[in-house]
Length: 257
Image 1 (spheres, rainbow, N blue to C red):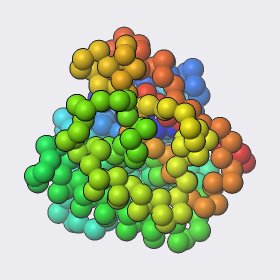
Image 2: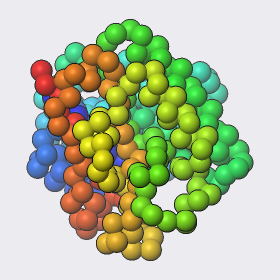
Image 3: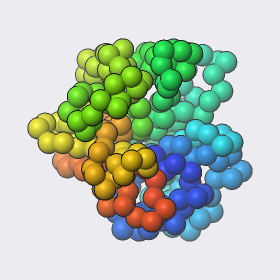
Image 4: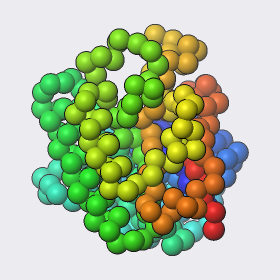
């Protein structure tokens, strides 16, 4: 099973890019983030014509998450992150696909920090940690995939001081990501590439794509049962370089049956 995560940064604006990548990469499951589309604006018909069933949680102008499944319909299990009934931002969706529980998540950016946006980022991530613990304890095969908006370690960002005060690299943010991993989750890309520099995001500003001034923000975490099935992983960097592309590239894993 090939599972990918891709912050599409506006699904209708980037639909041609998405369709080209789906046809070329043929992932079995795709977790999308930052749809920037309402429920009614989601291009379900176009995706169905391309062979993908979908579940999604839209939001006008911002956020939005989806799970696509090739040749089947994902079975929706959750459309919100538990822990705060007042939180209406579309940042989490969960579905079962061919015996694997898949979550697509779009964590808050948290900037500027300090401030209310950073406080929301930390609180949201703490809610994710609590829910992830419950999922892990079930013993089910689970993949938590998405844009975590956290750079886990200094080696996951190009050498720079420009991000020094950014919420993505703050010790509090990194500590929460480490706390999540301590539950037993496997960071798939870092596990298979323990020493390599791997980026999934290149900002549009300051020629960061041509300079390869990137960050690793998009992660696929595997529950205990799935870690032993991890075969390969990668990032489709070339997608970021296409005309009209998102500022993220798809990251993916392949699991053995």
